[in-house]
Length: 117
Image 1 (spheres, rainbow, N blue to C red):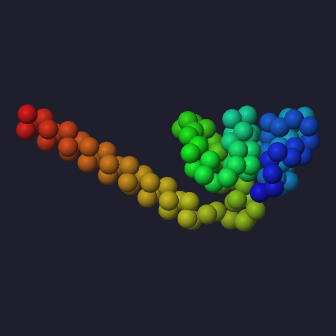
Image 2: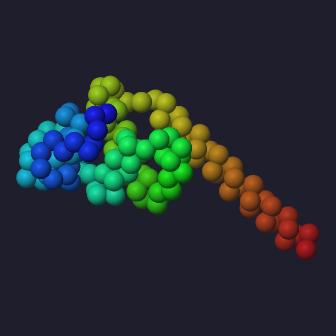
């Protein structure tokens, strides 16, 4: 991805998937291949591009911003690859399965503590 710091046109509330930069609503509203780019997401993308991996690995996002960043990056990648990513679907299924298994495990642990006590 080209640096998001480079604003393709003035402003920065839309992302041009085609051109790889931020667009203001006036320039991007009718431009094909643009998606909403909330300010927190723009800040995260800039951070990802300008910091070493050690700092990026420490970044903690709210769940909502994390989902938005993930969505923007996935749409950008799919746009340029011109097809969906099966690996992201697989990773989501795996993540969901692991979370479900952890939930079940903690429920079983809670129930065993209740019956033991």
